Length: 441
Image (cartoon, rainbow, N blue to C red):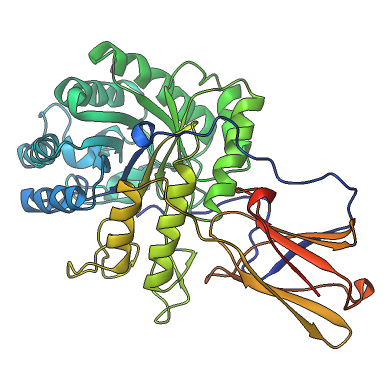
């Protein structure tokens, strides 16, 4: 699993994040050109990829579950180090057999595949000498996280995969999470320059192998745009057909933020949200893989609301939830570690088959507590909430806040507003004021 760190404008787990004294007229932007057909959005989930001990039965199981949940696409991570462990000795037969099996299963099920190619073999890694001395073919190593010393070996393997599997691929993604700070996925110095060089080399090689294949760049975890701007400066424009992103915190706010950076830099390529999700580890744990634990019911509701919000946006090409099945240390799956269907399974299946269904409405209640009012309620996951207080027709106060892990809020209003003669309205920023709920006291 790819660990996640994000840099959206505000990520406060409690209720109150930012209070603003306001001028009239500020408000949420709504999305123009909403998509009215689900044909444009590829919805699905992340399934088992090629590791060091992958078996054909895992591929069969993954695609069968993906079909049952009505996925149109699955995302798989291909460890280059497992596929080509030794220089000049060809591809590992067992690894190739697994990948062939997964692709043939997907084709038979009518499912396309997003293939992410990462993890450098020992013989090609740019890791420091100490790590290389400890690196062994066929065994996971810290050296595998470093990009290759030169781009040629990587371009060779992605071109090969494009030729072999192109017709079954929705897209080929060049590496995963180069902006991660934990050094687990794209390690070493000068990350923007080195990733840009890899992408610039891989794109023409893939296109020569299969001109029609979509190539994804980015695979970004940060939504503030700093890394993306550095990639633009390093010359990545024209070397990808879509920008992939992995956002687990404030997912809707994050895709909006990075899309605004794209537009400001003249980049109109679509976004592929190919990792997002929630872990149903509450109450056994509070935090898992840097994400707040939620209940199974909350996980299911969040998947429903997020897919239905994304389905309406024309500049998002795909959304693939992380992930198919829980493991011993993660609970992000729609299946338990033992293969049982969680509430998320039914929720995802319904959201993928009915993407334009209703999104949870905002609820609001007002209570007097001493000399001030407390506004409390709930809302759909994924973006900042906006609360506004009016006295008559005059806007007196506005606050942006985030929901807690159970999608609830409790916001104390300033005592200076008084405790009567107030009208309060609340809405999710993504949905806009047209979907606000309001109460008076």
